[in-house]
Length: 335
Ligand code: 1CP
Image (cartoon, rainbow, N blue to C red):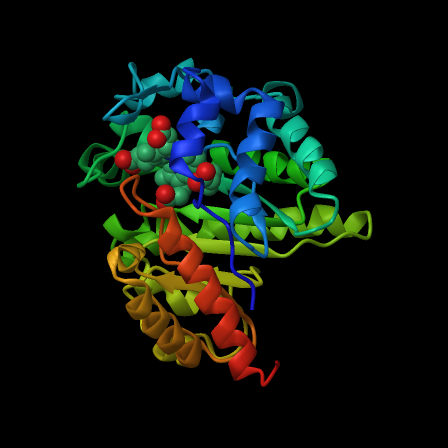
C-alpha cells in the first residue's frame, strides 16, 4: 500500500511560508514549490509526494491571464466566449520555455527528496482545462463550457486537440525533469453524460497516455500514469482500458464494485470521502479498514477521493495515514 500525499499540504504552514506571495507567483518559484512539496512529508509518513503546482499553469502558458482570488479561487478576467476567441490563444506554445519553472521545481524537489519517496507530476485533462478557460473559474453547472460542446462541437474539438498537444509535451518535460509518475486530473468529468464523455473527454485522455508512453518508449523509458476522472463513474470500464496503469476514484464508487468493473486490469487509487476527516480518529480507522478490505491487497494505492478543505484538522490526515499503514500491515500479515 502506498498513501499519496496529494492535496495534503499543511494549510497553516502553507499560508505562512507563502508569506504574502500571490499563489501563481509561488508556483513560479522552484524553491517555494520544493519547500511546499516537502512540508507535509516532514509531518506525516506519506509514501509519495505530488509536486506543488496547479493545473491552470497551462492556460497561462497559452497566454490567458489567471489570478487566484481570495475566497473565490482561480479567476480568468477574460475567459473564452466564442470560437473566434481561440485566435487569441498562443497555439504553438513553447512548453520548455513557458513552463520551465515547473520543470525546475520538479528537478529541485527530486534532489531534495533523496529517493525517500517517489515524486508525482500532474496536469489537468483537456476537457477540465477547457471548462475553466470558458467558465472563467469554478462553476457548479459548467453550462458555459457545455454550451460550446453542443453549439460549437468543431471549435471544442479544436481547443481540446490544442490542449492535448501541449499536455503531452508538458508531461514529457516533467518526466525529463524527474517526475516518477504522472497523474491526469479530469476534475470536471461529472458534468458530462456518458455520450459527451465518449466524445469530448475519453479520446483525449487516451491520446495523452498513448503519446506520452510511445515517446518515452523511444528512449527505453516508462512511467506509471494515473487517470482521475472525478464523478466519471459511468466511464470506469473505459478508463480502465485507456492505457493508464492506475485509475483514481472519487468516494462515490464502492471499492468492490470498482474492482469488479475494472477486472483486475488496472491498479485502483482512492477513495475515502475527504469529509470523513471530520470524524473522530477511531471512526477514521474503521472507515479506512473497510476501504482497504474492499480494494484488496493487490494493485491498490490508498488515497482520499478528492482534496482537503482548509478547515480540516491536519492531525486527522495523520490518523488517515497511520490507519492505512496499520491496516495494510495487518492485511498483508506483516508485523
Ligand atoms: O494540494 C496540493 O498542494 C497539491 C498541488 C495541487 C494540485 C494537484 C494544487 C495546489 N492544485 C492541484 C490540482 C488542481 N487545481 C485541480 C485538480 C484536482 C482537483 O480536482 O481538485 C483543480 C481542479 C485545480 C484548480 C484549483 N486550484 C481550484 C479549484 C477551483 C474550482 O472551484 O473549480 C482551487 C481552489 C485551486 C487553488 C489551489 N491549488 C493548489 C492549492 C494548494 C490551492 C489553494 C490555494 C489557496 O488556498 O490559496
